[in-house]
Image 1 (tube, rainbow, N blue to C red):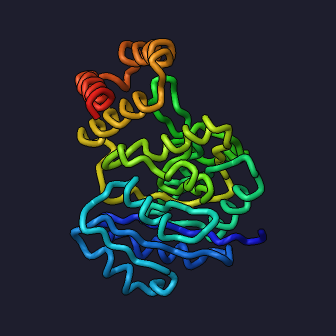
Image 2 (cartoon, helix red, strand yellow):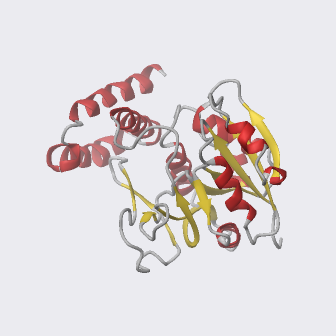
Amino acid sequence: MKNPLASIVILTWNSAEFIERCLEGLSWQTYPNYEIIVVDNASSDDTLSRAKNSPQAALVKKFIAHEKNLGCAGGNNTGWRASSGEIVIFLNPDIMADKYWLENLVSALESDPRAAIAGCKLYYPNSNIIQHAGGELHHNAMSEHYGSGEEDKGQYDDMRDVDYVTGAAIAVKREFLEETGGFDGDYFPAYYEETDLCFKAHKKGRGVLYIPRAVAYHFESAGLSRLSPRFYDMYYTMRMRFVFKNYSFWEILTRFLPFELRWMVCEKKAKGFRLMQFSAYWKGLKFRFFG
């Protein structure tokens, strides 16, 4: 079908600083057939009122307000189930999209019948410094963005299949969401829910595409600072949840443990976080055996 309906789900939580700019970016899109759903995860600020009173409010098909925070997975699941598009794009409110972003994202995903998921090239604000050009998942489930912190000189300009794409701006075919049930709510409140969905796509023989011509800027808004202890605690906890949900006992022994031991002993990034890692192992075991 030419120009299938694309549904853009914006999940907000205390996003008043960003939501109007996000909607403004969507108003510039060259793609002619899209709807917007705004789902608010019980914000304590005036996110919803700003969205409803913004100059672009008429673009929004539905505003949905949760009485409690359902996390990233739960909030996004509400959004896609309330949408109608053949392709659903989950977009953080702190994203400012280039005007060709949606057109290029939908076109690339539609042109590959095998693909289930696609992501874009993200820059840091007001720069050509790459934040995300697809993602790599190491054997111990540590995630890493290709190109992060690099000046864009065209080194990531080829469309390709990647391990995962960031949930800040991720497009998923509706039929795959219906087949899998969408995001797994066990990753609460956040982190690894999109990695889990991409992992499922690969296990089903489906593609996860990085689309370099789909460009956006990511401001990284409300939520946890990526340098805060709380961020690392949640990240490592969800990483272990991902491992215990997706790796067999044999894979944990032969894939996860050798890489994890090398990382813990040799990797400079592990310095200062080893106790937090041990806590995450315990939490992962508790989740695996006691739920």
